[in-house]
Length: 240
Length: 244
Image 1 (tube, rainbow over the protein chains, first blue to last red):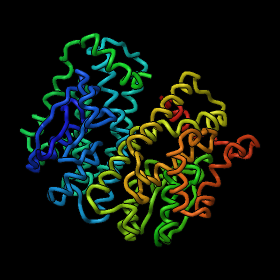
Image 2 (cartoon, chains in turn purple, red; image 1 turned 180 degrees about the horizontal axis):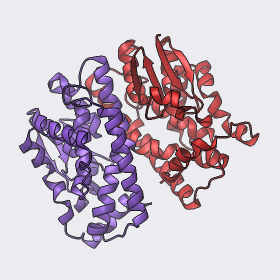
Image 3 (cartoon, chains in turn yellow, green; image 1 turned 45 degrees about the horizontal axis):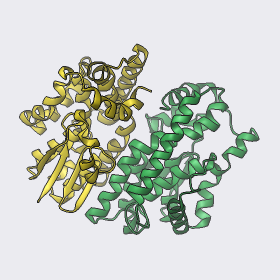
Image 4 (cartoon, each protein chain N blue to C red; image 1 turned 45 degrees about the vertical axis):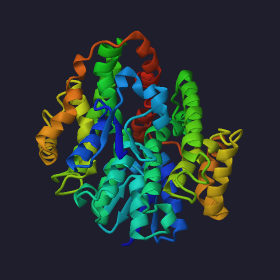
């Protein structure tokens, strides 16, 4: 058994891992774990990742979780082109800087937008107060501004002239609010142009293949009540 | 101008950077910015880091933020001892696995008690009791995962030697301990791990780096902490509102 990747393309870090592996022609077995069916909470998956989170990687006996760790593992193991994670000290530091910054900012904001706008009201049938939604939107707006001003500036990509892991992690996050119906690129021409460059660098077909699930998230049918109970306690923190 | 580090030792990631630089005898100019006095939101510092966050590194013209990025930069540039950030694929992956989880699941929870017990009263704000209780439960859950999943039966979090992961984790745990959480009580594995990390770092360096935070409750009781000026209140209130 070679490399196995446990993913659900509904999840933004899973999309980053998927696009990265496909784009770099890394051979892997796709193990889909359906988050909305609570498959990640199953005993079977807990054997792979006791934290019950996606993505997860299994390479023979070696199991690895956390998307950034997985992306870096694949980068080193498969000797992908240098631009993904540059050897040059300062360019690499820019990638590391973004990958650290995004956790409590864009990652948090983009996830919450999807859940506040779509997953709680449509899928789980739980209401989200207008005040909370407004606060989430304001936080996202602030993070987008910082992303443009501080990380993108007038560069083609976050680390300079070429796409890196940082851009991939960023774009897969930003497609979450897009899937939730937010026009985040409108009125932000620099951000929109960057998105186009990332899409072109990844390849249009692969980009949209990876984002097909999230673009249909608004149409997901209401959840089965027994599964809802399992999921709700895990996601409740997002509306507290 | 050589390497400059902008730090406040009341901040956990700042302490990690400080300890790392000191332990590895990396020469640097220490630029202290007092968060409680709002020195990080000054115009002058915004020119250096528009995110207005600490720690920040300045190396000639190169400015870098985010503690993990700074630690990796320093370990590469100064070729620190390999155990901190080994090039061996599996150990390095374990470090990043921990740091990823740490960023999502530890940072957001473990910082809260300092706010709840010290900083919130300092500006006359309040945190609802249900949030306080929720935070305690979240901390207990995360500590359990830290012990079971990340420490397991290893000497350190990612390998049998000290790595960047241990340093980042220690500073979060010390923060909790400093504000009165008896987190090592009843957790012998975690207590033994702390002892191993601190022994490696050396008592003197630990005392120097941890002194200010370990005194914070006493300072708060004696009212000797700086009272944050009004211009910092909005960012502080924003942070308080984000306590889950």
